[in-house]
Amino acid sequence: MHRSVVITAVILISGQFAHVSPTAFADNQPLSRISFGSCAKQSQPQPIWEAIVAADPELFLMIGDNIYADTEDMDLLWKHYQMLGAKPGFQKLRQHCPILATWDDHDYGANDAGVEYPKKRESQQLFLDFFEVAKDSPLRKQEGVQSSHLFGPEGRRVQIILLDTRYFRSPLTRGYEPSERNEGFRGNYKGTEDRSTTMLGEAQWKWLENELRKPAEVRVIASSIQVIPDEHGSEKWGNFPHERLRLFHLIRDTKANGVIMISGDRHLAEIMEIDSQRSGNSYPLYEVTSSSLNAPSGNFTKAGTRFANEINSYRLGLTYFDINFGMITIDWTRPDPLIRMRVQDAVGDVVLQKTVPLSRLQPSKSFKLGPADR
Image (cartoon, rainbow, N blue to C red; front, side, top):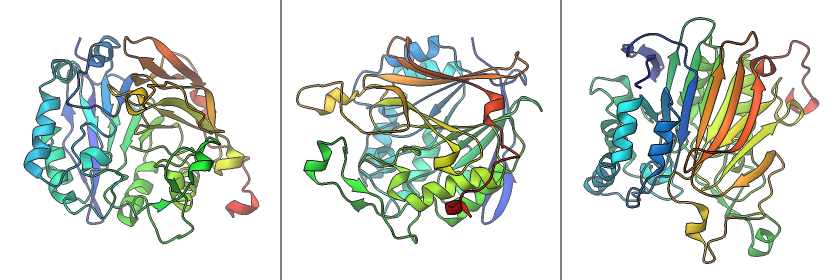
């Protein structure tokens, strides 16, 4: 059944905010079933869309590597988008519920690319074309694909914030030696000490601050790359530790309640928690990583392994390496609404789960800053 919601998007344009006209579906019911995923190879079968549609989401978030293009040829980039659009399962999802999106490196245009990618403006317009953003939308004029969307009536509002971690991001710093990878430090990059580097760029940071100050009961912040982990050597916010800390402190300083973070990119799935002592936020922050929709980690190793010794001291439970998608459900019928964060496999079975009452995601009046946070 096609679900119904009302979307209002608020986008930064040259320091000013403009409201996109609400897109009305059937009625204005509270949003309670949000599905998401990342890393979909358009040249391979994508049977997982059947399981996603069967999970009956009211909204689907595509949070990066929606296609694999890696090109500066915009005609070729568009052909890759058209391959995704032709998938019967993806077409079925489009008929089932609204889709919102941000990008990661491979649909942006180059592996691990950031601010230096020369075709980012052209790529942005094709991204917006594929996701059917109106030609007169403010998203067409801003730099980057970041957007914010508000769903539901007062008291049951859900804010969806989709960040752009590519358009403004500074170059990465090469890091770990092969011997260190055997200790669980997988990847090629390490954190920089250069505080002039950025993940979001100042315009997007100002936009995000304004968004977090707006009233909502639940906020889902989508980052194409992982936010909480700081120990592995792949792409992550931890490559820019001052920016990671800035995000945590911004959530605290704006008193933004109800934050859940989601991410992709890694061709693995896991659920993480960072407590107040380590983040500086006044309540625990949770992150669900879901990846890949059709290209599991085993596809990229000689042995086809589904296991790896990767350090992540924030992880709750296990890492899941096979095909998967994410799901967030909100039970608004309870006096204290219950949020379920799930990772589901290729046939829809739940493989990872964390349940949190909304009351746990509220700023604490008694929270005191530590010496490093002042």
